[in-house]
Length: 96
Image (tube, rainbow, N blue to C red):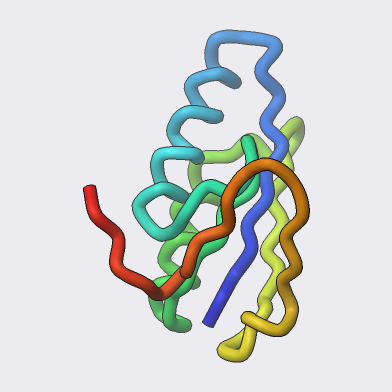
C-alpha cells in the first residue's frame, strides 16, 4: 500500500535538528522523498507499523508532528503531479 508521510520538526535547537535528520533517514529507508518533509512509501502493513513506531520514538510530541495518509493499493489514480520535479514510478526499478 502507498502511505504518504509528512512531518514537521521543531529545529530551533540542536536536538531538534538531530531529530529532523533521524526522522528523514528512517523515511528514506522505506520510501522516496517527494518534497522536503514529505515521503511516499510503498509498504505492507507490518512495515508501516514498524516505521510508525520508529518515527514516534524519535519525535518530540510536545513540539513535532507526524501525519500518515493511507492511499492504499490503488494509489496510482489518487496522485496527480504538476511542476518541475519529475514524477517517478513508486514500484518501478530503482538504480543506485
